[in-house]
Length: 98
Image (cartoon, rainbow, N blue to C red; front, side):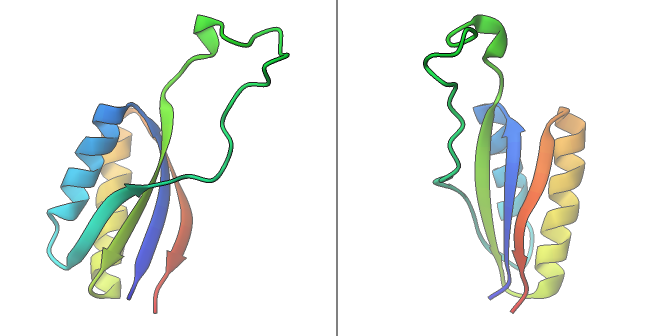
């Protein structure tokens, strides 16, 4: 099955919005946030640890499974447009078309 993994840097609400848009597309079997194994924490000994200006939007790893390659391509197009509209950063982590 074609699979797309994306990392979105945005708020929880924005991530939920993007997942809802993508999951509503024809040919998409599932779109969900999955556990991100990449550490995103400040060093506890850092001089900036815990300061409010280092706190920003979270990162969300999103996995999309489609019924075919066309659905995955459309999901990526919609995700890019949605992220742009929200002012969020979107990175394609993995795109397997099987």
